[in-house]
Length: 101
Image (cartoon, rainbow, N blue to C red; front, side, top):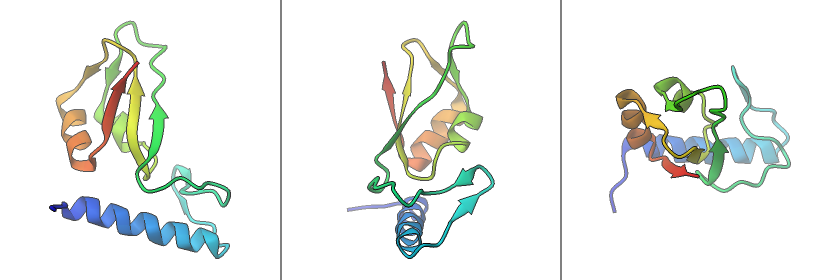
């Protein structure tokens, strides 16, 4: 088995956050709560649908990927979405699956 240091840090961080939330600590980030007390998502299994309704041709950018929840393991995008090179790089680094609907 092989795991990148980035993935390992992400996994450890997620476990620490989950434990803190269980103890009643409110863990936040600039984008809001990291994990709600009633959220029971397991590690990196959170799936987020990215709204591309404003795009004539949907484009998944690096910025979209950077704004994802820390526990995101997959993103759902519309068929025909263009993925920028920087977004592809981050997707590989964060080991996120891209699901086309």
